[in-house]
Length: 87
Image 1 (tube, rainbow, N blue to C red):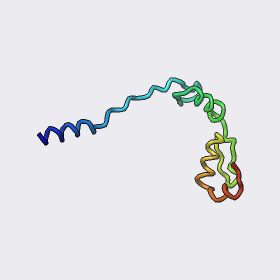
Image 2: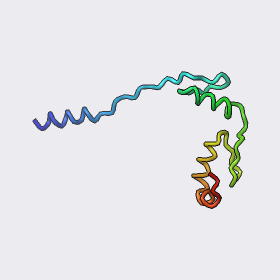
Image 3: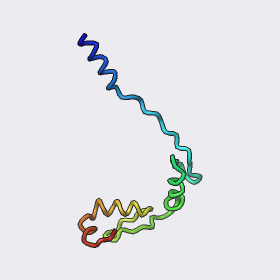
Image 4: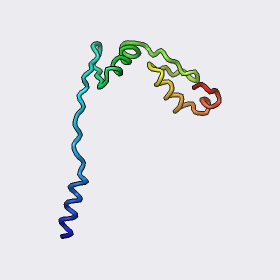
């Protein structure tokens, strides 16, 4: 009786295989693909074939999207961020 309970609980805890997500929005200029059209549009507007245009105010880092700069500052310059009130 105990062995049947243990084998049942092992079966329930077995992870299910993940299904592969089909990314249906492909960039016409490079091999990138996106699940959401908005992400493809951001890629085309700010990234694909473009130089990084957003500059960190505290160092020489440049990013292709403003959100990348915000994340960089939060991770690399948290003290300066609090002092300057940049965001």
